[in-house]
Length: 395
Ligand code: FEO
Figure 1 (tube, rainbow, N blue to C red):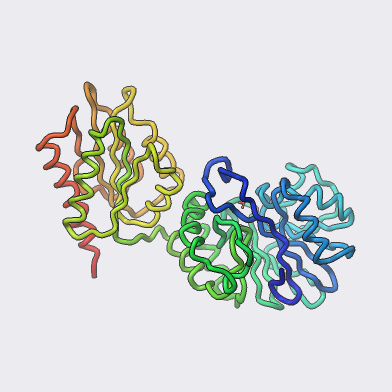
Figure 2: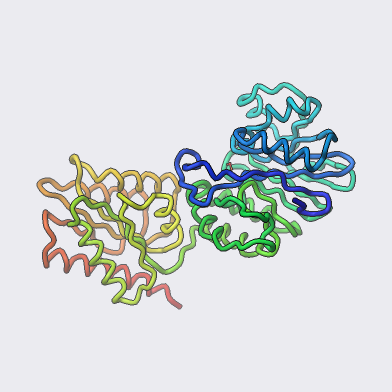
């Protein structure tokens, strides 16, 4: 598949995996993208998950036949891209592995590679003939060794995971030749789950790349971007600034439906008070990757859970832990909880609120045993406070 006359797609689709990183569902699959730049010298950019090596080497041979590969450029060492390095070296014993200092140390650590390497520094240039490749370090997007490779001859950015998304490629590869509808939500979910902790580093990377003319983005997951480059960059820019739309995610745990009555009352009140974007997630059912995606999307967050084992309902503990890990910022928060004989859930939610320093819109609502008119009134007040806070941001 041609990206340009001399750049070829040799990636593979994984429609078998249930959980990416063993954590995140991939209902549309995921692609591991790799590219060949064919010039006086030939370069392979990143590899694929080793489980797909047979298919991968077949694609490489289709593009270059028996020609040798001179360089393997390693933008990112996570094994979904580096997994085939060892086998590539077996097929092409003279290949030179190109990476920065941290990358080459990781190559050795993961694969015990001792063959030819070329260590590059930020801004270094490698000539393939017509194609001039420069290397730009973007540490912690989302590993420390991450870099991007820029082909100034054809204005192509090989961006590693940056600008990537979940979703296998359905036939075509380049955005202008395929229906990209499924990828936008999957980009936000990918970002929230995989990159979300590193907003400041993504901002630094965007600033660093801002002056470079880019006609094509070749990332390691999802479509090759050409027509949609402004939208892709704006998604990454917005998410990495932790900017959010008007709306509320109500994430709650419930065992017998009592705590859920609080969630439903809050949702109805938000709607009655002019908040159109209200998303409820029952944490026993919603996969947390979708909850995270929606929390990254909307400004308001309301968390609710029962007490469980003298602590909080476990699914809520997992969610709070994921939010803390991602250092998510700039949210309005409200909390509610319940107990039967000794209340702990609200105490734990309040401790979370203190720690993450979100703006708390109202006191937490605590319910003992069943739902009643007094609790209903408190839930309504919480929802009204959230709606008022959100509406105060309207211009
Ligand atoms: Fe797709 Fe961070 O590896």
